Length: 356
Image (cartoon, rainbow, N blue to C red; front, side, top):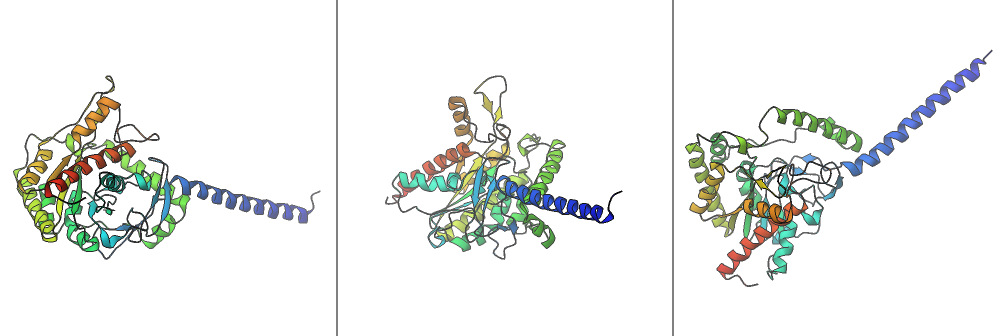
């Protein structure tokens, strides 16, 4: 007959072992999750240079799309911690492609651009400041540009990113004209923010979000470039020209030049190696015309991307752990963008007679 005291002790011992095992497993999972996905969370900022920033002076890792380390500066952007924000030559604004959290800190196109310019002998251009942020389309950038300029006061150029999954709407551009474009909040209360401080829970929430986004994407067009463009909105073009004129006036008032960077996704031919194409729409031409009419430099990555793929089989999007040609700019994509921007800036500086 079992001794009741021994039975009770065994139960307690088993519970302690289970608790200890659970705690140990949770700790191990959090260590693993930290190196798999520990990107900084969004933080509300009173400075309207972007709708939000990332945690300041933060170091984390990502392995679900690309394998990289992400590091933020004291303002919450993806720059070297020791970057002197009082001597910014070039301000780069953009979406998560520009943010470049999927590649190592020294490999995003803002950092590569700075290196390229120095290699070309422009030692005076030593600070390229990356203000890229998740979800910040061209509309958001245009809506925030005045405050972005006030924060870092660039001396030479402002680069704004436009990609072909923008989502074109005359109403959105009209709101940019009046500076009424809706600002995105962080979407996180204190409770959710606290949960995201735990790496394993952050990774779990990230995976659920990706799953829901994937389901939503399947029920809609993947890229705005696939939309029917047979009836192009003239009002969109008219509003776009007004915004471009406003941006040019803002840049001129500061004494800097504006560059619009346009990059499309490639559609790869699964049957013919090295064959790819992009779907060009009139909207892309609208941007080029609006830039040309307002003296704004328009850098189109289309030909560079197509040439890189046809000659060297380089795909600017996608990583070893994701689908080829999909998702964010990879390391090769960032290098290609930096090369094109560098050439445009060097050409412009040479024409202006800037001393090297």
